[in-house]
Length: 202
Image 1: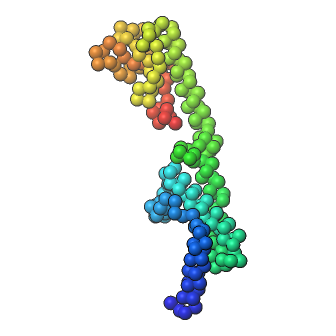
Image 2: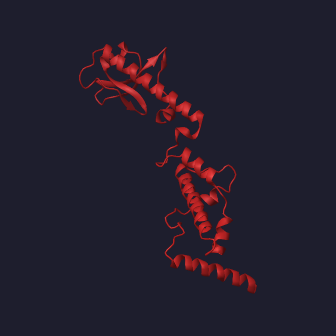
Image 3: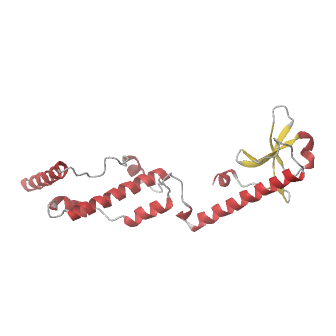
């Protein structure tokens, strides 16, 4: 390495040492190591998991904060400020991730209008299914302990005694060990009134 390059590197190190001696932080200590998803997104068609998007958002947020810190201290730390200024401005990307991915890692309804519409349809379907099953329970005056709607394999069902099986519309989704009770899902117009397993979880 040439003398000039070495002198520039040492000057940068001196500034960094002074920054740290003053008790200042760079902000990267608490961040998750991005190396894994950095390498993966280099491939064609690669995608991140929601949790990794949150890690990326934290990294972008820290980078933006650091740019601002060095901008405010540019007179005292000109070399560090110049390096920080070279970091891209990703405010829009950061905002998009925060809008689409909730802190718990779930995808927000605000991620897209299509997703919001799908989830609204799922909610309406679930409500319709539960109302249909509750109507069946009321119509047959279900006994205590048999008057509830529950989930079985991601499908809404009600308990039905074996002797009443043929008197109720629905699809059998299981049976008790002794065969005395079975669980039914509601039907309408000859079709099972249940969302798919995937959408039921949505």
